[in-house]
Image (cartoon, rainbow, N blue to C red; front, top):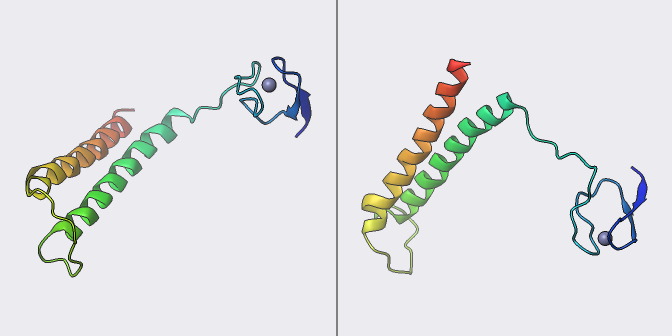
Length: 104
Ligand SMILES: [Zn+2]
């Protein structure tokens, strides 16, 4: 970790920054690290599973069987259509990630 000078404002900053904290310009010469392709595919599966889990938790707390009674009224369209659609979207993301993993 070193110190270098911002080419835009001249302030001394750490060379680990991608943007200058003083003038907020993007610094040249620092390559952006992107995750390898296999990590992106695995993260797609993981992200889909995470979305499904979050939607399932929200659905549980909005359902009438929940021990937590929500004090705010909500439209029944939320639990009837929206949350199942989001759950299926997460499932689709998982299946797409698995499909890409198998294809390669
Ligand atoms: Zn700067």
